[in-house]
Length: 343
Image 1 (cartoon, one colour):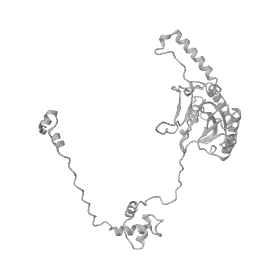
Image 2 (spheres, rainbow, N blue to C red):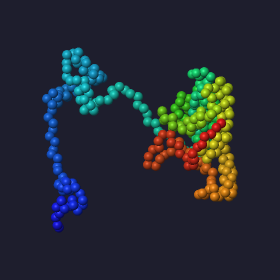
Image 3 (cartoon, rainbow, N blue to C red):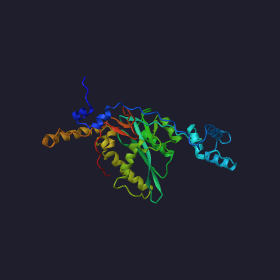
Image 4 (cartoon, rainbow, N blue to C red):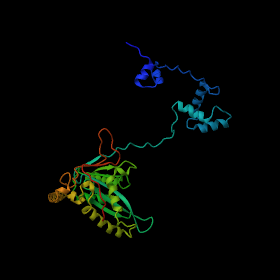
């Protein structure tokens, strides 16, 4: 086999000769590093062990190195700086919080699926401003996650578990819910986690679910409904009285359930999807679009128009294949961009 000079290889491949020479050399083996000699001012191993044992002793076991250092100085003893004590304890793996700390429990991410109305409700409480600064009213809302229909609401001067029980029980009876049919999801407010509400849900055969602490987007549907309320052009800066607030909210929820058309449910009013009337309305919309296509097919480039699809399933925190969904994700099988709405 012919041998080639590195200069010939560099010319043939149009490479820099220095690079060819460098790659032709065998890899150099680094010389073993010599251990650095200990500085003359460093502590001997015996002194280090003595300091660690002193810090571990019964006398100093509950004190910080700063306190130990100060105590020894007052007694006329200097072993090392308090920072060196910390370093020696760190090398021994003994630097940690010595006091008993409350361990936060691990909260499981709620994952709930609704495939029909009255399978999964979401509820929350929000504040609305009263007539004077610092005065608020409390709005309780029960929302069906699948249909977005507000199945129950009330407004009061205060937040209490008794009012929450009353709202849940009345809505449960009005919707004719059967035992083990319904799951109610909420955040961890005082009324939501109260013992009396938990007993009521157990008596009614309702499964309860709570968001993880400090994650309001684990309850996304209620948060979105409150945003729709407070972003209405007619929503006042303040309500003059509790009766004023109730009158406004009666008009709002009538509009929200029967006229408002969220994009997540195929631009249908929530009440129509909740009662099953949405399928007939969907068919009427399809006929209108078919007639428009028959009259002017040239106006539709790709295909005949279709109304937005109705949802088949709605998730709170859908499970993701090969991973975990981020908190508060909403997944629906049909969705189109939402448009602004007015009361």
